Picture 1: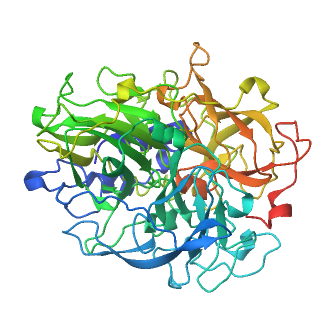
Picture 2: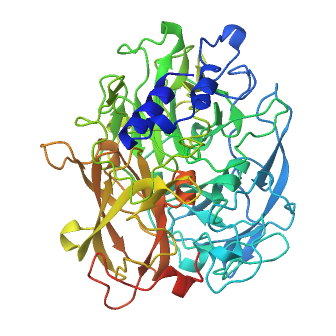
Picture 3: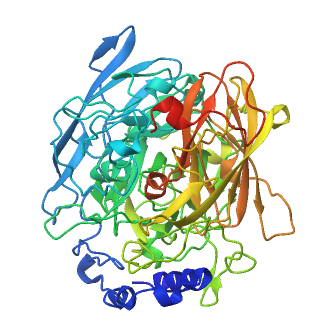
Length: 622
């Protein structure tokens, strides 16, 4: 394993004054994984990983197929999707793996609709077993009836609810965490309807649908309950982008495997978990054969907690990044709609690489026309856990200022106990490569799509920050709970605490996302498509800086790095009701970095820290 995890552990321990409480066994276990890992004969051995050796680039990338509707419902295309336990082949050298999948597959089928044309979608999980694929840790809230107010019914181990990430939907169709159902028909306290309605009244987007069940969403997603979702628009069609077989979704997810092919996930809760093996569209280290022409790639990161820092490497030039050796990646779209301008990514471009945090998305166009016969590797330079890409050395975390000074650990007792810092046994597996792209010698048909450098992207009408009715502050901190588990919080509160924020429907607000934690947190706000206004380092005298070039468009998830404030503007337009906002590292969200806001009709609560009503009083506790 890389030395990073040892340094992180010791550094954090020293900062918290707990170096003496870190068990020597944790570091000894680390040493068992240290040393050189051979990749002879194409075999892979992951840093700090548990997976068996698997040969890279042995299987071709599968392309998700668009699902055909099962019929119509009230004039809308209707999908009835079975949620099943089945087996899946991740790699030809692994035994088939038991997974949970939408329509029995991982990732789930591609759901696609046109802008302003509604989809109606129903999920049937009655075929799931009574026992979960992984161990349930009942120290995590939401797993027992005691965690809910005014609800004394059972909380089955197996329960699911599907959230359509980033979609503008009514509360009852939002797939929120306490709207779950079990295979035998037990429903959560806020379950309202079986058929979820997606109006698709928003910008074109590449996004995902995934499980959001309270207390076990990290487990259900890791088991396989995630799939791609696309909204098309006429504006998109007019841009002359690559289409059909030249328009390819890439669903990135890290996983770890036992020797028998089963998925590996810890039996007890860990605050940070990452797999040691890359999968794309459900296959381990696949290759993709392309023609020497332009391709559109729709990238979605559905990993529990791993951030990717993606770049292209030329296998024929010994990974040298010299001008002309590697095609430029041109990003045209963020989470929603299109960017203000096309962003060139690569050596000498607007950005050196493409960073995609959990449940962020990016659409890029790559022109392979000048690279016939070449082979490229999609590399990853992001370490885990991700800390904003800051430089590290033996002197501590370099955030451009004091090492972790002022890091908000909350009011909790930081005694780590006999278990030490619970980071998955301090094993931080790194994944340096994702997939391989092999360019054929010639094309099968002419490429008439516009070169991405010549694209004129449509003007975007986002929220007007000058019209903001109020400014809210959302802080991020970490601490230890009563079980000596690491816990992450927003505003030093958890789910059952009172609702602080009540935006008025139709108004615009500015939210200041303040991170004094040691992690980068990808913050997701349900319902809204927001605009990133600026970033500001706490330890810098430069003041606020503009958003990154590829953040200048519609977003619903934004990375907030340690020691940083990110300001976003959102308009709360179409629906009233209660919606969550949370960190999209699933282990953080689960414990307990998720809160609720309420969009109200009439006058909103203008006080950013206003009292409001409690979740417990109105929601049955979530």
